[in-house]
Amino acid sequence: MADPRLTEQRNPRSSRIDELDPLGIVDLINAEDRMIAAAVGEERAAIARAVALAESAFRAGGRLIYVGAGTSGRLGVLDAAEMPPTFGTDASMVLGIIAGGYGALVRACEGAEDRPEGGAEAIDEAGVGPNDFVLGIATSGTTPFVHGALDRARALGARTGFLLCTYPPPELIEKHDVVIAPLVGPEVITGSTRMKAGTATKLVLNTITTGAMVRLGKVYGNLMVDLQVTCQKLRDRGERILQEMLSVDRERAAELLDATDGHVKTAIVMGRLGIGVAEARGRLDEAGGVISRVVGELGS
Image (cartoon, rainbow, N blue to C red; front, side):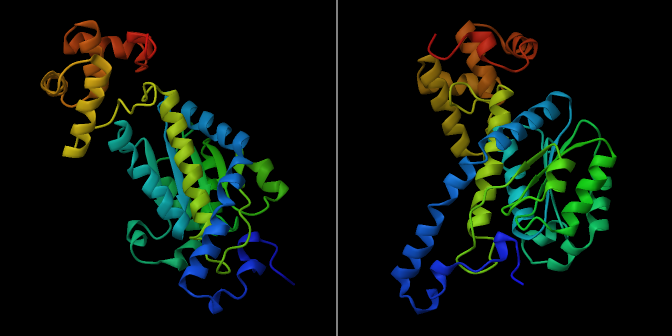
């Protein structure tokens, strides 16, 4: 009997890929990749629900926690790692848990995914509680480590979600607060879910965290005003944002950035309202960090 999971089925369009020249292989993979964005788009309502759950968790002082194995786990850890430099978050605000621990990021540890108790233990180690939102990532939908983690998270009162790339069974939908299932179809190489399923996973995770951060006021217009100036590239970006927002020269932008220890949002408030650092920070705190509530909408 054929495996019912889409992620394990053979793709008839690539059944003779081993006979193609390099350009033919590239064209075939690219043609399959073109289906991914549309499949993710079909899950727009579920993804929006996940954005709302993440925002709610953050506003309650909780976290967004990804749990996965293999490629899924690595993508979760990657998305979590990109939050502090991009949006100025605390490193614990978005957390990635991968079966086998962080060593599995660079060396395959496939056996770890078969232990549901390992997932439960990881949830306990993370101190998961009722304010957290835990999103399991398993493109096949069957990874025991992920199911064990989510079962434990629910027992601890957390909200839970599941991201997979095959048809979700009814019991999965009933169990979790949200289920996201972009159906990208069989992989070019049978079962190689680092390909289409992995790309779909990254698109979904990027959308969830970006959407939640926008809702928290960490973006002004479409500018990442809560970025951490931790390297020359980000300092350059911060200075250019201030030049554009405040119509000042590079030297003044640098002065404002230095005065705020590299916090672009505070520097914008200082420059726009002509106030000091302490008052600018106080006004942002009163506005819940939403800069438009302090200085008005972009362009006003």
